[in-house]
Image (cartoon, rainbow, N blue to C red; front, side, top):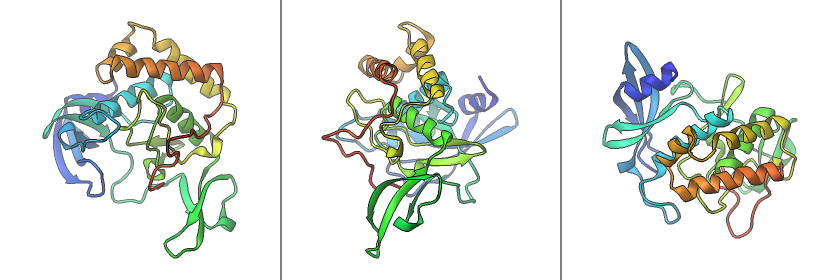
Length: 263
């Protein structure tokens, strides 16, 4: 266990503020153990709003399961996350990335159609608040392609642009509470990669996860503490499907493919 994970798992949680724009109760917290303090986001199960298509009281578990998958495959997308007791009961505690007082560096943006930056991919056209045409774009980079592959694996149904920020050379992703469903629900702003062959390193990560998902293994046991047997089986099927056809998925039918709002 890393030092950060140990602090998150064992430290004293002190709430310092609430994220007012979060759809569920989410708090900024300082977590302290053995003289070390980690800034984190605390999401108690008791603060989750019911959803029509996900079982009640499971979002914090899915946040934690997404971290376990990210680590098992070597994606490193999800910041360190634990499921534990804390203020208002059980919930997920995740390391906060960046400085709360500074604007994060995002990899998704909204620009005018004639202002798409070089090395960025257009995803969706629309209109701004003033009626002017705009385009949702994202970076065409290995770091963002890595996230898109991870999202396909976990069946992420809410990959908004604001859920991705740069940390050094990596791109970190947040808010995975509505992922890992048994039904195909991929909804993302990263469709610029749709249909492309998966890079060799992403195939290797998916194969690594496949090996770790052997029945009865440590990962299978850890995931079953947060997901149903059917949900773990669906994860395994998605992994095998991506290995059989190593390409980024295309938008599906019968389900909105872009989250709203996209950022």
